Image (cartoon, rainbow, N blue to C red; front, side, top):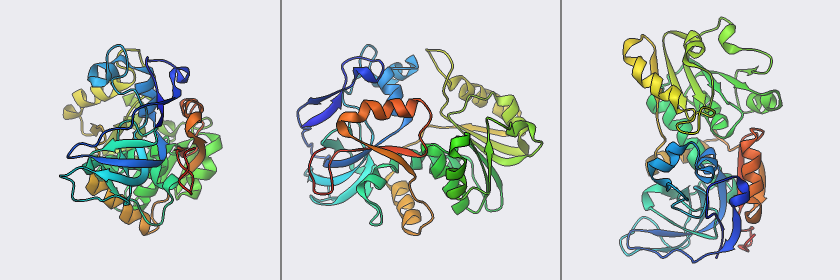
Length: 331
């Protein structure tokens, strides 16, 4: 089968479209014929092996343990293991599995759910990692409540576009922070107010928010806390920049250390693949409260270009790799 693989850490130049063996299906596995695969920031981190903490956490010290990139996916079940009862061949699914930039991928049933019927495969592939991150961050860690004032940084990106819509679905008043080029998108998906960070510093406006959802930001904790209400909550998602060892995760570490001594609630987390949450997202999608915002699509062989575009920070919403066209042909 065709797949995007790599033998060493580095820039998108280390990626190549190649022929690899189709995964074997274990007793507890689902084999999915991939139609589309989303591109998320985690793909870039595993590709580059940066920060080095990524390697220490089990991705391989000298080279990627999993050669094929990708995590988000949408497709049809090709086969199931003898112990799998939830899915059957032919089912349309979406979810997560390592190595989704390929024609076939092996997935755990717990990381899959039936594809929302209202979405195409391309739209569905944009959902899992980013929408789960937004959902778990706002609902589980931010404890967002109806009527709260919520600020979302990185509101025009993959996680951010879902976060804006989810916060609105939970009844919050939402302010999105983004670049000039993404203002119209952030307003279109429901933000009550949009701030262009190239022209205005939200932390210097004097406004206060009950919840700040900081997505892959690089602001220090002090200005973020100044923008919170006296007992507000800051949820930090990811983090770019920093050194080659721990990258931007130093903010999360500091937040966990100081939070017990503050009136503010400082939280951080790593999103988990949960079938129940994929189903919860499906309900919101089918109700018309959440719609994937897709910047552009790329053929499988153009995955390196997609990752370059993502790394440049210019993507408005999600980028998606199309592995098969509507007729089922490989791209």
